[in-house]
Image (cartoon, rainbow, N blue to C red):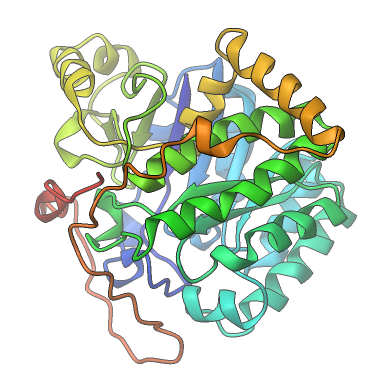
Length: 369
């Protein structure tokens, strides 16, 4: 099972695509290491995320605690606080770091509301590599404003031997937004094609399977049905900053327990989890998140066969037949006209969230078609 722990909703970025920074948690209420100790051992992939996890004063303690529980521990970060990340990399070189990067130079800074964000992220990346971190990389939220830079971002990762994770812009309860839709779905999906071809030219088999998974990303962008049944509540789960456990990071109605009051076993053997799995089986959202795509690419021989056949095609000077693989005539209408203005340099006073509130209710019906 994969598990993501949202350590905090505090954030020092001001992303146009996520407004969690407008609704931070109170540090005193955030999930404590003693509660995180209740997570089981043997987790396949454990992601520490936020908000911005480096704003937790006890992040290093949490990494020490959780690293033995997971085959792979990953920190999803904006990369703006290099000192703390560098110390973790030096102590735990096998911890993966994924730095959120939504464009080159000023493009990133505008989308993510970060002063000198791109330069600071690149400096952090160099420090992580020098500290011994293995395969640090970037995570990109693909959207209309950065589609033209996707291939350059991949090449930037290749320059230092890192990895690039790409997710399409989407809505989710923790973002406090419902307008994360593309203004031009076809253009955005087509922007993935050069990335797929570049991955197939790589010498790394991991990139070949990612190329297959990114066909599913193209279908998600166009609004088409998923390439596989959703594993939410079975193969992965999310823990929010107060310890509440969710089967899914998109739908707030799929809360299945509270780690502060229950054991992990009680939660996953309980009736709420069984009910959530039934809801997941009927869900019409077409999410295609990185963890889902990763698992899909490793199931059966189909993805590997596709990757090998198309790698040979690319090596011979051709490219995958994208129009046969994806129906570009089947395009969903975006239900909301996107209005995502940059928050760079704009004043704002956050409103703190408390566990006693029900902060996700307004986002239950956000469209993700």
